Length: 213
Ligand SMILES: C[S@@+](CC[C@H](N)C(=O)[O-])C[C@H]1O[C@@H](n2cnc3c(N)ncnc32)[C@H](O)[C@@H]1O
Image (cartoon, rainbow, N blue to C red):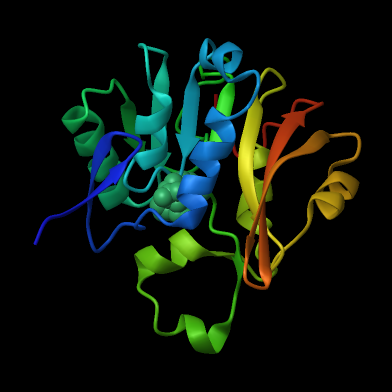
């Protein structure tokens, strides 16, 4: 059965093997679109890592800015492409890992990532499918996948990333990134006992771990 969701005037098809847009998806869209310098950022294009259904990149692509999307789940990459086409958005979509499928210096300056951010729970995770695990579980502590992708960025890039209090905090990220990353909180959402933040992260040094340019 085909199911649809309406997100920011985009009709987004959802499917079982792909993360369904949730509060965190909408929170990230609203935060970015609400930034005072959103129009300025738009000019430099977007690359979404972990695009899922493509809801976020479809909402960000407005007037022909360069937009790319990548997801390590093949079904998600395919669905992002379909949803972009359905909503008449020009989004180049790739199935792959983080920023590694791309040549350095060719990417849009703005990276957006709603990562898997939950800590592992070996007992509870047994019931999850492979696609659910890579969408939800960020590692033992929860923020490992986020840091892995941040280390793939170039100095001209800025990332907008969701982090969860179940894994880390903006202060901890700032402390950990000292000298390498500048971390600034641009959004906050309380979901019961869990807090989500959107942090804006800039790289201060060139780190090309994982890249094969
Ligand atoms: C929490 S879901 C977010 C999906 C969508 N962006 C949204 O907000 O609705 C995380 C997505 O990231 C993908 N993912 C996880 N690690 C990734 C990586 N290293 N590279 C590319 N995609 C990744 C997962 O397959 C999943 O689709």
